[in-house]
Image (tube, rainbow, N blue to C red):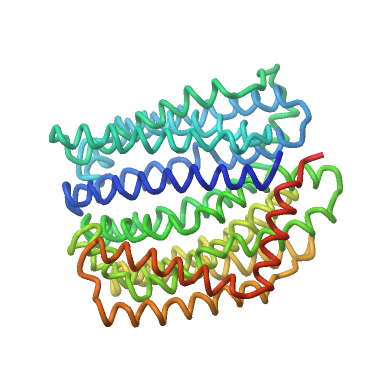
Length: 476
């Protein structure tokens, strides 16, 4: 597997998917308003939380074991068997408590939730298998397809007056397409399942599940608590802010996703020196976009929400700034966390995640009611910093020495500060009163940041070495 090309291919697909999603959300936000959009986000929150017991870390275990290159067919069939029972129990539970679920969501959506969890888990398993086959780049098109289906079908049903349920129909359509296409692409043929292979999957997944819980927790628990204490309109505004920040971390996630199976393979061959050499090479590219995005958001948060989505969403302006800072720590965490799992230490990743879950839950319960959605953003930021970055980094450093590229990251920060000063000066002179002016400011900021960053000979040399090195690194 070529790590560089796979990372860029996945990043391009994720970026395209996010732009589609961003445009779709902007359209739906204006047409539907925050309350119906909040219903859809609550639906996604429940779907994400139900995925915790439905998957229980199994997808990550499948990716890890298949990437090791042994008994792949047996691992696949054993994973399928392990998934059936929890899925049945979850669907039955949804049907038994559908009235409570419908009341919480604000619409009759429990049946669609049961369908969604089945489609989601089946489609995600196919993606995990492809990643385990070191075919990470091939999963890129599946992500684009899912977003195209969501936006296209959602738009069609919204125009017919279906409201929030239109977005759910789009979601289900996208999951169906990924399910069919993903399994069509899988080349591993299921073999006879065995207790030995099932036990091996469970041994890994029981720790990986905790890390998975952390991921879903940060994505959806604050939304669920906001829905409990505040209104659906607050849910909609907060989630819009979260979706905006998620775009800037795409390159970081692409790199983390791509290096996982490769590090796993090297770890199985005791090639620790290759892992140690790789980590500093990917840390700077992982943070190179999120640092200027944070500084840019400080001066443009209200305009981003108000002009793109509507004035009713500007209540999340401060939350947007806080969540964007959270993405800076998240960018480092996704690389370090996935690397820790790849070296077969999901137990340590689980410890870090448990700390984050406890901190996040406690702070959300304490801060959401008195401080609203700003409190939820602060809770997520603090938990992510302590658990996501510091603890994952500490545990990984006990196994593989981590060399932090401090000078390169400092160069990114200095260039971002310079960009912010210049952009703020331009804003004072011409203002930002339209979407066109906002887009011009964003583009101008990107140009200024790039010029300032690469005016440093050190950064030019480092990035050249990175691309030359990473583009020729193949698995062996």
